[in-house]
Each structure stands twice: as C-alpha cells, then as structure tokens.
Image (tube, rainbow, N blue to C red; front, side, top):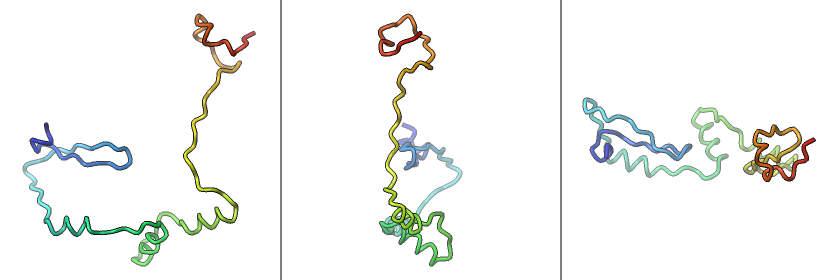
Length: 113
C-alpha cells in the first residue's frame, strides 16, 4: 500500500532476495531520464569472470579476484570446483546431554550407562 501510494521506494537485494524499503521524501524530487534508463539496461556484461577482470585491468582498476590463477591452481592440484557444503546431521552420541529423558522412544539407539 505504501509503494502504491508512492510513500516508499522498494529496492531489490540480490544477495538476500528481499526488498529494502526507503522513504520517498517529497522534498527531494527524483527523475531519471529515459535515455539513461535505456543505456543502463542495454549494457551487457561478459559471461566469464576472466573477461570482466581483463576489462577492469584495462580501465586501470584492480580486480578483487584472480580467476585465471585460481583456475590454474585448481587444474594443477586436481581440485574440483567448490560445490555447496552439505550440512552434517548430528546424531545422538554418548556425549549428548539428554534433557528429555522422560521421552525414551527418542533415544532408543543410544545406550546410556
């Protein structure tokens, strides 16, 4: 409702997949030229990170990463690309503190001395 009433601006955040709300101050008029919008949307970035790093270096900026070096090291050492780490399921062991001792069915696989 606030967005429809133009009382706030909602900006998307790609990292957290959430929108961030900013107040729309009527004292500060905000108008973006349509040509600038088209120009911004028309910029196509290279798909490969190495090409992006080359363009940054060519324009006098230092890239934060070195993809070529990382790929070469992975090839030399035979390291596969990182995959998402799987969460380890914690089983009940002898060291587990049993606070629900009144529920013996939950702890059948554990032999407590």
